[in-house]
Structure formats: structure tokens, C-alpha cells
Length: 409
Image (cartoon, rainbow, N blue to C red):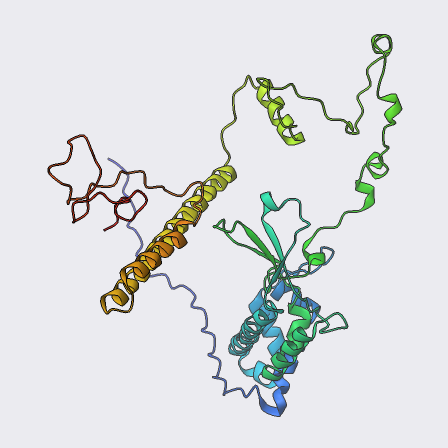
């Protein structure tokens, strides 16, 4: 007989400890930020400029600065406790949201007004001295940059006038510009455009001294600081000296370029250093040409687009000239119809108009109409079958070079 099991004890529902609900914060009244000539806004800007708050809100400015692990809402809560302690004791979280909203409004207003300083001078200046324009794009700089300290003796009068207008419009602009002008998350150092008909452009919104990296002289090879020019008298060696002395490869470039052999009896142009390097690479690769890169494909596509646009412009110009010519001829015919011009004057005027619009040179790629003109329908039935000479209405053959001989009606 199996042992008897004891009945299970009935367990009631387990009661979990209930956390006490946090008391709701009382609602904050409306904050008048503009009271006392904007005293609260000035206090807010001063707290945003404090280092421990600035590092969290806008990031590090120097690489030596240490970041702080606080959250932005924590910083806004701390700022609210500094500028409005009476509200912080009652509703710290609600006050942090109010402070955050006001700070973001100030930053957005500064961003919008700072765009007017980015077009100072009415245009941009190209950096023509940049040797890497083909690869990195055309670098463009603003006409004037205003530092974080405000206008100085280098500021142009136009930029100074814009600065004064912005200060009158938004009195907090200079204080915000002091610590926001050099922030990359507020004013980007540079803006690069896509590849279009005018190529790629890189617009520097901050001074080049802030966007370019500087390197110490210790990183440069000493041999590159003082390059030695090879003596031209030691360049030519006899065959005996070449056979006995070891060959020394110099790091400095040779002053003379190697001569190229003429091709099929014609003198070939001297190739550039880049072309010689390309030829050497092709020869080392077995004559196989490397595939095009993405940048080269874009450049090729851009060239084709420019050629097509140029052809369209030429065709449009030709059509406009033809339309103007027809309008002038119609005006002459109207004057002849009302009796102002006689037949001789009309013929001279039409010939002058034709010569005026026939002297326009065409480009090499402009389309040329090579289709033969249709024969006149007034061709005489009694003429020779092999002759294609048109006839006028009176049955006489027009003189060569006249309008009828050219197919004009």
C-alpha cells in the first residue's frame, strides 16, 4: 500500500509591496522672461556659458577638455535651481522643461540670425590657390568673419553694419555669439555641395584657421625641410664611371625630363609627370587599363551634360536668328505690299538681311543641315528630264545666286 500523501496547503494570493506614488508637482505659473529688462534671460545665458554646463550642452571646444557624464535635462534642472530657486523647490522637473524650451528658443534665434553674417559682402570668394580643387572641390570663403569677441579692426564696414542691425533686432545676439560662434553643432565649419553642372563646392562658414589642422615641425622629415638642389655638373657621367661606380637613387626629382620618341614621323608633345606615371603603371599591369572610379564617372557624366547643354544653346541661338530673319523679311514684304518699297529696293533689302544672318559662324559641334533642298513645284514639264534647274513663273531660268536659284520662294 503506497504511503498516503498529505493534503496540499491552500496558499492565498501573494501580496506584492506597492510603491508609494510620487506626489505630483504643482503646476508652475507663467514665467515672465522679459521682466526687469530680461534679467532671467541674461542669467540663463550666463549659466549656459559656465564650463560644466557648456560641455554637456554644446560639447568640447578643445581636445584637452574632459567631458562630463551628465544628461542635458540634468543640466537644465541645475540651471533652473540657480536662476529660479523658489520654483525649483516646488516643481524641479517642470522648471527644467521650461528652462530647456527657453534655451532652445534662444539657440534657434541665434542660428537664424547668424545666416545673415554668412553672406557678408554679397558673395563668396574662390580659393584659386588650392591645388586640389579637382579632387576636393572649389573652396569658397566668406568675405568677412567675425570672431567670438565681436567686430574688430579687420571687420569690414558692411559686416559691422549687419552686426549692429542684428544687435538692435536681438539684444542677446552678442552674448550668444561669444560661445556659440565656434561650435560645430551650431555653425558647421564647412558645407559641401553635391556634384552639379558647376562642380563640387566647399563653403567655409568658419575661419580657415579653425577648420584646418595644424601640425608641428617635429612631424616633418628633416630632409624635406632643407632640400638640396643637385649639381648639374655631376649629372653627366662617362660610360666607364657608370660601369664601375654604384648607382645611387636620389630622392630629389631630376631637373631634366626624358625625351620621348616621335610617333610615325610626327613630333609628340612632352608628357607630364602624371601622364608618365600612368603609362608606367599601365605597362607594369600588362597594358590593362584600370576601371573608372566613381569620381571619374561623375566627371565624365558632367562633361557630357555640359556638351549637351552647349549644343542646345547653339540650336536655340540658331532658331532665334532664323525667327528674327523671317520677321525682318515679313516686315519688308509688308512695306512692299503697301507701296513704300519698290521691287529693286525690296530685293536689295532682302539680300542684305540674308547676308546679315548668314555670316554667323557655327560651332564645331553644332548640327548642320546637309539635307538637299526640294525642287520647286513650278518646274516646267517641257524641260530636260535630267535637269534640276528651277524655273520662275514667267518660264525663264533665274540667274545663279538669286533667291529663286537658292530655293527661296
